[in-house]
Length: 208
Image (tube, rainbow, N blue to C red; front, top):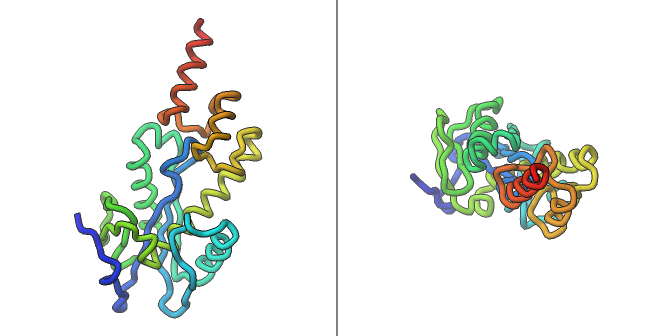
């Protein structure tokens, strides 16, 4: 497996696609991946790892990326699929789908992390900490994160009381308290602990 070094990544006229995901760690909701090909003619300042940005700054950059990028695409894999195939494989499925649905075929794909995307008929390299060093991956990180956050906000209106608009499904203390009180809802990942532990406990109580 090759890992690209940030200092050696240059455009050289190539169509570079950055890919990243959001949502591997949460207890609820989908994993979302984004693929972005930036325009060499339209600079976007402030691109970095989405986790280092405030929500307001992330949203501003998200809108700027959608407006200025040559091409972008997002893909999501549901909690049901995550439970069946595991979250790493689900994230790679989402990444592949985002890339293949781009309107422009990239010359090379830079993937954040240390895993390559299976069954992708495009040259690719894994870039550790790529969301910090490769603008295309930073852009993909922002698009994936904001898209997933927006989805979880919508889910908070359907599954009221779970606080998805606040914690976005991540394993926070407040989320754990709510899980203990209400039990998991339809978008919780049953294969993730403590969701699985609560589900088993509830099932045991019903059978008792």
